[in-house]
Structure formats: C-alpha cells, structure tokens
Image (cartoon, rainbow, N blue to C red):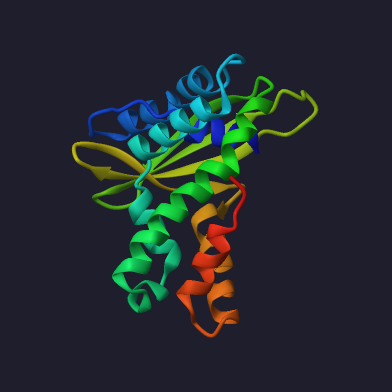
Length: 193
C-alpha cells in the first residue's frame, strides 16, 4: 500500500484538456512523491510538511472530506465542520507520512483513461511491486477539473473506493454514538500524530 500513497501525492499540475493530459497528470505522480518524501536525511517534521503541501496542492481535500462525512454534514455545526476539516486532513497526513520511509522501488504505469462526465475523468494505473512474484496492484484515480487543472477526488485500490471506505467507517462511529458528530471529532482528535 505504500506505493499507492507514494503515487497519490506526486501530482504535477497540468492544464485541463483531453484524457492524454489526465494520463500525464497521474503519470507524473510517482517521481515527484518519491523525490519529495523519501529522502533519507529529512526529518519527520519536514516529511509531514512536504506531504501536507502535496496533499493540499493536488487533492480536493475539502470536497473529499465533505463527501466522506455524508449526511452528517448537514447536522454538524459550523464549528464542528471546520474542526472536522482540520482533523480529517491530519488523519490523512499522519496515517500515511511514515509509510514513505518504506518505499522499496514500486513503479506506477498508466494504462488508460476515460471521461466520466464533463468534469470528472478516471485514470487507470497499475503499480508494480518490487517483489517480482507479486501481481501488479490496480489503482484508479478520479480527477475533477478545478481552477484550470485537475484535483484528485477519489482513489480506488483494487476496485475499492478509499473515500467510500472512510465514509462507512465515519458513519459507523457517528451512528454508534447516537448521531453525534462530536463523537467522530473525539475519535479523530485521539488519532496518533
């Protein structure tokens, strides 16, 4: 899974046009992430800072976060919403930043793309693992046009949406606690940093 998140954060800004551009956008992922996040001599704080920058520059974190919160977005207060966005971003950063130290030569290959609608494109990739005996891992990227370029709004690993998985987990926490968004915030506050 390390390779997925290496690729996820290495987006090179590109103008919007045909699928070829979307494919190039995703194709530039791995090199940039590897260069920025796997240097052996950088501190963890620097890795966190670089990761956060790449995440915010190339993912539509607020759109993802709102979608993940689902129907509970409407019941959250404005204060809860803002804290949720901060904690959601922290969850992503602190869950994956240390995985970059385990990079072992995985490679990303773009295998195609298709327009979903006038604003979204899916780009299909395979990640070849360093272990020659392992089958390639299929990773699909949902890109959305934003501000003259692309932003990633979901990643599907082996056909499973990471956004949908997180949405189900968050909804379970909220439902178990009587519909309380505050219960989710308590859990997110306690996540290791």
